[in-house]
Image (cartoon, rainbow, N blue to C red; front, side):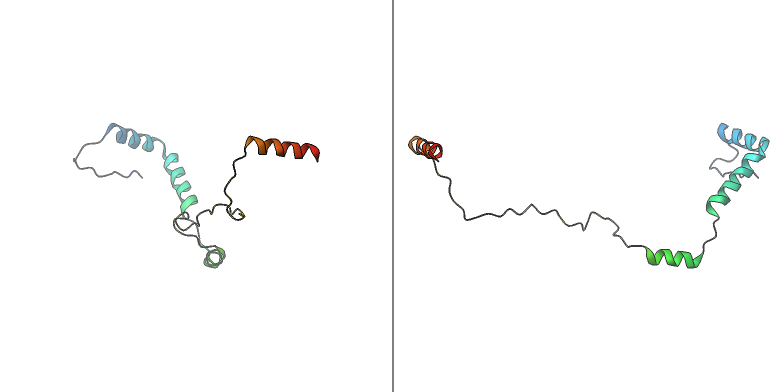
Length: 103
């Protein structure tokens, strides 16, 4: 069975539509295969008990999963009391090196 699509201009049939109408008229197995495949994919019997079980076992998720996601927190670093860095003088640096060698 060939279904005609209505168009705005009466009587006009595009080349493609004419080709497809002719092709499907000469190859009815294509129409039968198309209908069989549609039935196989879409006409599925639904088991209500199995559907209810699947819905009960499913985990709800938000519509947009990234909207309410917690923001990552920066790592917490243990810090002691704030101490200002001290500047080493050349004499203090020499003294430290000397005491390190002596030890």
